[in-house]
Image (cartoon, rainbow, N blue to C red; front, side, top):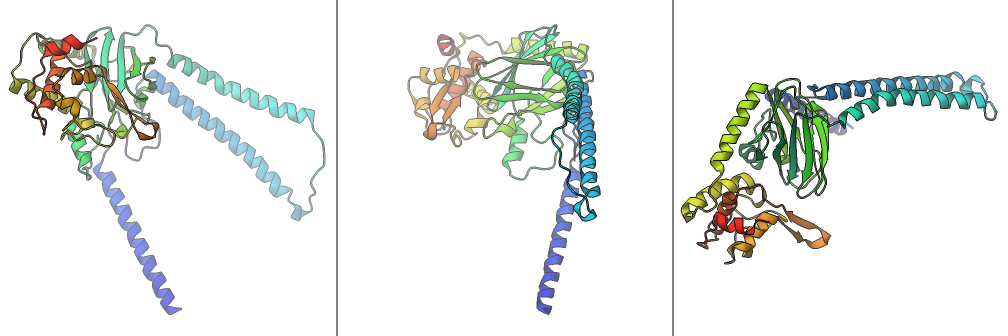
Length: 401
């Protein structure tokens, strides 16, 4: 018995010590990470602070429904438990025997009906407002792809601007290390944020190139699926300048966690300034498709294009991962017919896998002719692929459909 007590005391001591250590570690981690303005907060329990009218209405509706349901729950269970306790058998009560009561049935049908209607009216108002995408000041097409977002400004100030937004490379390195440091914006920092003006109605049109994604920014109160072959839309009007964060909210593959959304809301003047800067960048990037590049120059440019758009799936070493095909040693990459690889990059490709699954390589037509030629030339002359082949922008132009 004494030995058992000793063992019990030892186990108790170890358990308490482990609990204390876990609590200390959790507290230390919480102290190291702070609330991210426009993003998640430490130990967050409530919805994100709203910065749009729709988000405010959603939050009010959330609390309204919660309070109504709580009142109903407390009322029903209070009556039920009181009745059980007050009329228990031990006090000599006997169960009553009676048949249906029309009055009771009418009452417990009418009252819930009225409650549901009173709850449905404000909910319907909010849902209808969420779907009213008319009279937008700015329309942006958002394309989900594994595992990044494409933004195209198709109507309003900034029309013609388009770019791809990916997880910041430093964030990926932190994740790959297996021991990421405590940072407020872990897996939420991107290379190219979506920029919109404050106080303007922004219509978001969503679609996808491969699988189903979902574009969501909690502070705006928006979440809209992006489905291949379909177009959906939503809208928001941010009333406060700042940086707001979201993520893909539809499980979309092995790097689903690496699809952050960063929306930068700026003043009208700063937005116009940003548009002007982007237009100048686009003009500078409009290379002459007839230009003939030297191998060394185009490979150097292709390395940057590959790091920004391809390394996420095919890896920096070109070895691929899982169902993602390797580019190092690939027959398509090493083939003397360069048109094969150009066609795959331009139009994408679907490969059947064992078990009835498929691997989808999305099309990359949004890249310029020079960038496509550069990244293909880079893959053909990197790692073990020492082909010496050069793909020129004119070769890409010839195969565009």
